[in-house]
Image (cartoon, rainbow over all chains, first blue to last red; front, side, top):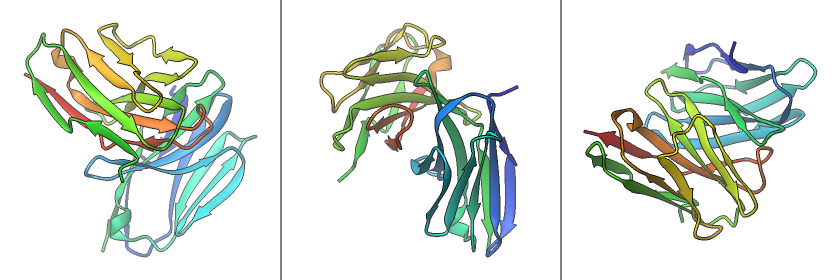
Length: 108
Length: 113
């Protein structure tokens, strides 16, 4: 079993839909990261959180430390949101453990 | 201005050669990283480095070595390149270790012939 599990692996939705991507982890963490990788390959850090909830524009990230679970939400999704979304956790040994990513496609 | 820059963007070379990929960050961060993204798009950390400590992923062959001339640079040297080294390599930086946001370079696509 992977230490960081993301679901779903692939997600296709229509423009305007509310999107949720989930991340579960099994290790003790110092922080959890959500990153975005566009088809061109560049990686952008979206959020880093260790508790509660963060919001940036149409993106919202939440984390429940007790349940070892985080979600990334996208409101009013747009085709430009199409990308791979990656969850990664920083553990107490300064290692970053990555999920396999969720490929999101938003159709106009 | 690019925050984390990698060069070259593309690298095509023969098996057995030695090559380097350069990474520079102008964010004043104290920690830099190298990642390998394999054909299945998994991102695997290779090295984490700051001015005090180098952490090596034990699965990384010793043909790979990081070199840091100063805090703003972390170059990746690869000796005796093998076909399996073909991948996209990403450099990143952060202030502090794994509990801080990381800023990524655009990646270097390495192809071994």
